[in-house]
Image 1: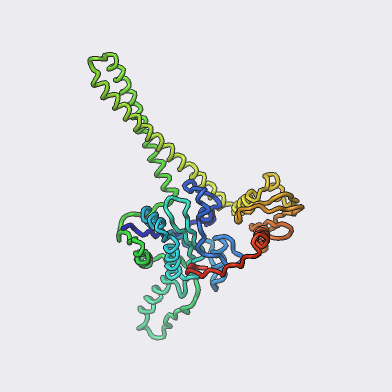
Image 2: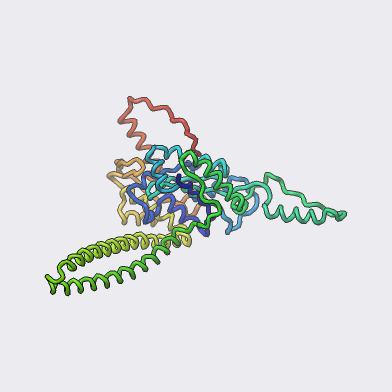
Length: 414
């Protein structure tokens, strides 16, 4: 029986880099781009919300919080759910991955509150299937630490006359507080309850009190790079040994008949060493390729944190490239100039081309968000335009087929 994997952390600094990783606006080095279309959003965003970052802000704004939120408060918890790799592949091969996802969403919503679970994405383009969930830490009542402190003060002063006792604040006060969720007791409870929910899939709780600690992905690659340097030294030593072996073989070859048997043994030894060196060199090259792109990813995430508008411009540029616009045309759009297009525009969502003639494309800033951009075609959002054209094509091709009734909701969050 394998282990259920549950990891919860409070992000540090700007969360846009995490959104880029989860929503694959920037593809990490360890992801298979050909399998990225298999990833699935398990929770639908509210109307008008298009990204995980927007969903976090929308929940905070609609939760009824009256107290001002400071700039350094944690706005969302990152939750990663998975299992031992071989067990996750077993679940997937048995056709139970959808059921596993449903049970994970139910556990998240039962544990943190349905409205607080604003995003959950299933990643199938990495080695092990897993879910990245986002929880906004909305709680009710007074802060846990403040309640304990004032209860102690009341206990010390309860015998003194004419002293006002501490009055608790209403139990329904809505607050944003990650610390009240990430207590030691809660974290142990989360591990216990999650493992119970996963028992049906042959996944059990990890060892209680284990010294094992989760490390961040960047730290993992830094450690991996250090191991690569050790491998380089091993390779150099093996190459020296190989040269020594070759020298010995040449000496033995000169003596021919006298040491034929020994020469044959040494020849096999050399071949084995060459295979060993080749394997080490191949592994080193692979590790370098995995490390170096991720280092560049850290630099990109830093740029997104310092200049949040870059992330939005990158999204629009990728959208324009995806529909078939040339680089020069995209540059013209970013200058605020309208352009006229003829021919075909490609929809990656519907995987087909749509013909246009004298269509007008132009970029606009979203109202209320100076960094948010919208690409319009003939005055209409291009995403909505593609959906409309696709419906028109469906009606044209299959007008005689009666639409199927809507599917029943299986229990995933909406």
